[in-house]
Amino acid sequence: MSLISAKQILDDANKKGYAVGAFNVNNMEFLQAVFSAAESEKSPIIIAASEGAMKYAGPKMLYSMVKTLSDDYPQIPAALHLDHGSNLAAVMTAIKAGFTSVMIDASHFPYEENLKMTKQVVGICRPIGVSVEAELGRLQGVEDNVSVAERDAVLVRPDEARDFVSASGIDFLAPAIGTSHGAFKFKGEAKLDMGRLKKVKELTGIPLVLHGASSVPEPASKKFEEFGGNLKGAKGLPFDVLKEAIKNGINKVNTDTDLRISFLAKVRESMATDKSQIDPRKIFGPAKDYVIEVIRERMKVLGSSGRA
Ligand code: PGH
Ligand code: CA
Ligand code: ZN
Image (cartoon, rainbow, N blue to C red):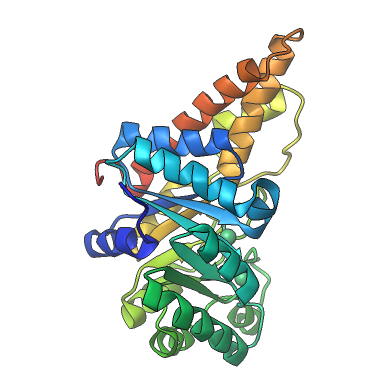
């Protein structure tokens, strides 16, 4: 199948109440893992590439690999999405390379500035069928001792979300509801502001995105530490909380950290147990297979299995 926009994938998820994984990739092995998992699970996929990924692999290289794989797996609906695009130049670079979806992340600017930049991106993308994601609020751990006023400054405000969506014309929105990027998301109990999420869904009705959604699965992080790594204090989003977020309106689940940890956990294991191995394929191959298992498990939790 040729690449489609993320909107096409997420509209179905929104209608039927499930979520699709947006998996961050930087290289061939991760891409192969995402497509292979999608094939096994019969799941649609969103391939997410950040500005860092474009810098590391090259935007054209990323596009070519994704295009080749989507030709190899014609039955899998797939989109190539720019993750956290910080300005118009990054958006243009992605579009020119062939990306079918972009995020413009101006959420750290004041509301009006965020809206202005987002509208500009929608103006460029809408006519060419590229879908647009924007963000409201900032990703940050929600601490128990944070006051209501401070939480409001960090998390999405539902009334703003309603106005922002209708004024900007975006296709899907990332509302900050208490997650953060990386392996250390929560000091205590993993808690998201579900009430806020529900309200945003009620007021906007469009597909919603959860950033910082990795679960830091225990088998992978245990393996990582067993073979010399240090992930002390790591805590992700438990599957039950993730499922509740999906029930309350999340349709796109951004996942980077889980792939990183599982790949490198297996690399650590292989290198420790086969010390004279000099063939990288013997190290990366099993790591890729391990990432496939982690992605498949996630697709089941998200409810995207069987939707392709
Ligand atoms: C993410 C990924 N990418 O945009 O939001 O978050 O660090 O939880 O994988 P994680
Ligand atoms: Ca942001
Ligand atoms: Zn993110």
